[in-house]
Amino acid sequence: KTVIADGMVGVGATIFRNEGFAALYRGMGPPLLSLSILNTVNFSSYSYFRNDVFRGGAGWDVRNGCAGAFVGPLAGSISTVEHMIKTQMQLDNISGKQYRNSLHCVTSLLKSHGVNILYTGHVVNTLREGVFLGSYFF
Image 1: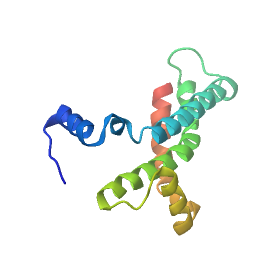
Image 2: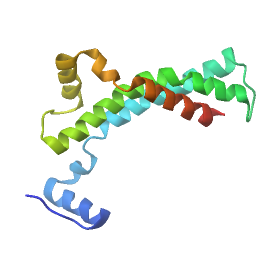
Image 3: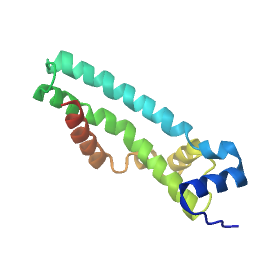
Image 4: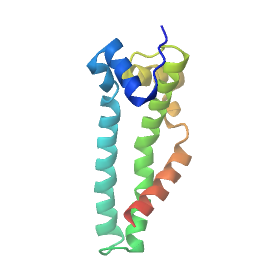
C-alpha cells in the first residue's frame, strides 16, 4: 500500500507509524562505517603529505592545497566503491528488492561482474576528490 505524506514531518510520522522507530535509522551503518574510514584516510594522508612531502606551513599555503590534492587518489579508491554500492542500493529500492543489504549487494556484484564493477567511475571520482580535498585543505 502506497501512502503519500505531506512534508518532512508527515513522512517521518508515516514511517514511524507503519514501520516503527528503528526504521527511521535503517541504513545508517554502512555510510557511517565508510565515512569513518574515508575521513581517517583523508586526514592521516593529508598530514603525511603536508608535513613530510610538501612541508606546508600554517594558514593558507599552496603547499597545503597540493598535499590535499595528493590525497585524492587514495580517497577516490575508497569513495568510488562506497558511491557505487550506495547507488546500486538506491536503484534497488526503485526497481525491486534484489539485494538484502549492502554486503549482499557487494558480493552479488563481485560474483556477476568481477572487481572492476566496483570502480566504475573511478577516474572522474578521483579527480573530483582531488579538487575537493585540494581546496578543502588549502
